[in-house]
Length: 373
Image (spheres, rainbow, N blue to C red):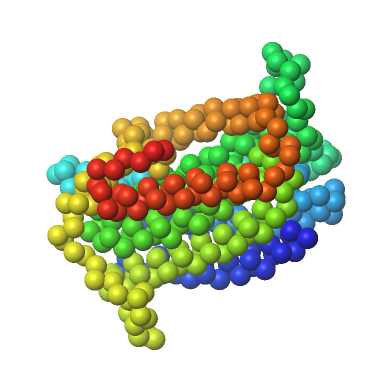
């Protein structure tokens, strides 16, 4: 089965991710503590998703993706992961850029201490736990909507009759918001890694943006799977494989950052990976021009730089909510989500992924390139 094929990939992906976290937080990197907390929170998502998947299988005989209330509660932990990473990165970048402009201020606590973002993770995780606990206590059914379907438009209130009725396992608006927000937050985090290369004068941070690309494609794969109402099982092991590849490339990227900052290994140099040649001050102007020219979803951090953390989050979720309504109530007008054609699903996954990778390549070569999305 698809889940059987996916299991080994998901299991193996844990080890490079642990190594990624280790290399990211070595003292020589001076990685903002809150950023490390954000990336580490993904482990919480991994380990708490397991009991949710087991519950879906034992109680209802379905995969986690087919039980909206369990699925949304579990997936919200990934949104928390990316949200904490973005907020911590945003605070660190804002402080460093103010320092560059001669504006003196206090160092954000999330830069120096794990505590602020750890507390935020704890509070948000408690809320996510309640969204699963309360329906479980009142006897939720397999297709009980996440958050009671509070954001969904009642079918009788829709002013149209769509070409296709929604299947029972269709995601609710709240569940779609969780998924789309995770994708957008991850793009923003990738953009922050790119900008951090400018702030630190170390272009190897841009390598982390590249290393995270397969993980973003993994997220696109998950959303595509749901777009087709979970009817193309092969997408599950594909997502698992991309996760394993992405965790490995992120590990290598973090390793090269650590080596470039002077961290030494007991095993000596590794060809290519240790060909670092970092901290080339001659590239700083180019890096600065690149970071100022970025225009895309990953650059919402720049576009909303004047906002505080609260309004930034509200605007981010509002935009993702709008996209969720378009997807949920728009796809029922088309035939392809119900035909389950694999080649169409692969196009949804790899065309955006290729364009995203090419966009970063162009930005590496041409600082004036703004991209398409």
